[in-house]
Picture 1 (tube, rainbow, N blue to C red):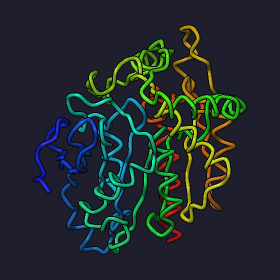
Picture 2: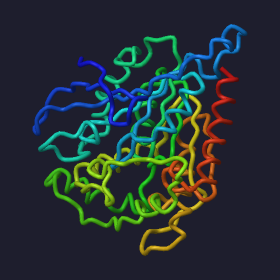
Picture 3: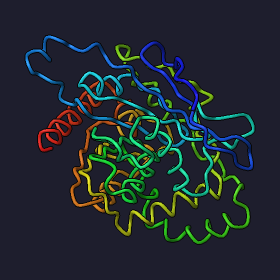
Picture 4: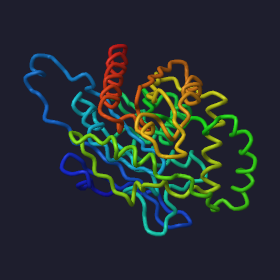
Length: 335
């Protein structure tokens, strides 16, 4: 394992390269980012006032055509005593290497290797259970789907699962059953055939329109392009297979919190409505699918939120953090 080195996000963060072997495109790595903890308040500890999330590890996984860059999200956890880690999956962001197809996998279970390596580097063992510290999984969009499937396959690993607009169902759910056989056939015959680009860049524009000057974020456009990365048949088949598994019902034993926008607006043309709604996922379908994740699921609907609720305009963003605080406080109090 290589050494922790300074990260592109600055002094508060470090990164570790995780060697995952090779595939047909060459060496494969994932990248684990950690937020350095704030200085402990010794006076509070002397008085017996331990941080709310002392003894908690958080592992964040990003969405499609994305990577980790949200400093404030990390600070939310570290300011409450948790250790925060974020994983740039293979062929995304910090982990993308020359000659690789960005974001491509043919099976979401492939990411078991990335997650296992991250947990091992966090001192939890490859399965995540070799530690007395509690584990919170935090995933956005495709990362939310990936972590949901992983948590269901590893029922004793996570103590809580928090999902930020998880991609649990295909856009317009009835279409999934209709297109799945065609996508499966195409994935077997021509897995690297790219679908036409349908993203007009409106979601990126909406984020720029509502950006908070008091919470600035610098984004690398090579790692997070204005229009999403190319979608290939093999990757889409993996996503649809994940959706089918969710629809059949998962068995996540840990409590789950799902944060969603209150409404969906299709991104067919630009309008100001896109700055106060999810323009990526049909949120009502996601809310219904969320109830199939496990036996304890909370769904939080946030008025005015974007697809990434923590990148919404100021009021919706603050509401998202308040709801996260409330849920985490209740979860911690019950453990």
